[in-house]
Image (tube, rainbow, N blue to C red; front, side, top):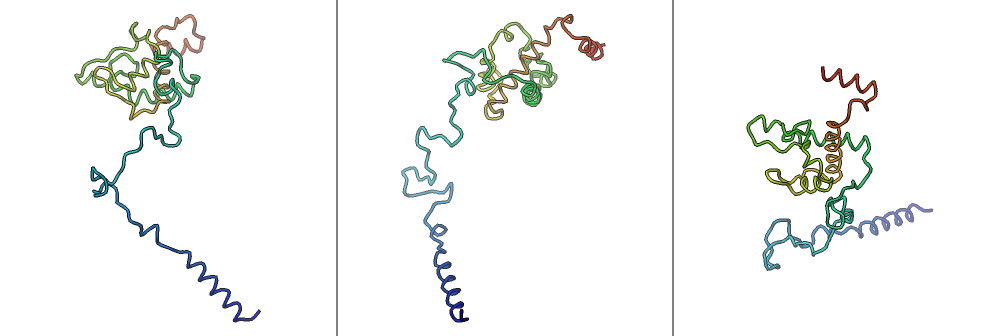
Length: 193
């Protein structure tokens, strides 16, 4: 193959390759976000999403998981099995988001109470012990009384984990000592002299 033929093929290839480079997408007419736009009646460059549009992967089709209800009533069930891992996650989220008001034991004696703010109800009173898990989910999601909504701060799965941990706290106050194993009794005595 001659030097001239190779040179012609290389040049032809470069011409073809470079002819595919356009700046059309870069140079297209567009409005930067949050700028005014004479085209729309409200002068906004950002258009609202059409009704019913759901981002991929964000369809909330599980009523129990996302509302705490089944057929419009507070659920007595959890949307997934409560495991040790779920309880540990619930304890972590409870200590982060709930204990400042409700205290680490769920008795309503959190730091804000010690600083003079009104005391929330104890999770150990009979009224709250009787409430189904769906009730707690609704309160965490929508707020109640002085408590504001945690929907933006705590994802639904973590809300359920918190509820599982609250249930564990409630059960811990009512376990008869006779039902504990010898190791558990020793641990109880050691931690409560």
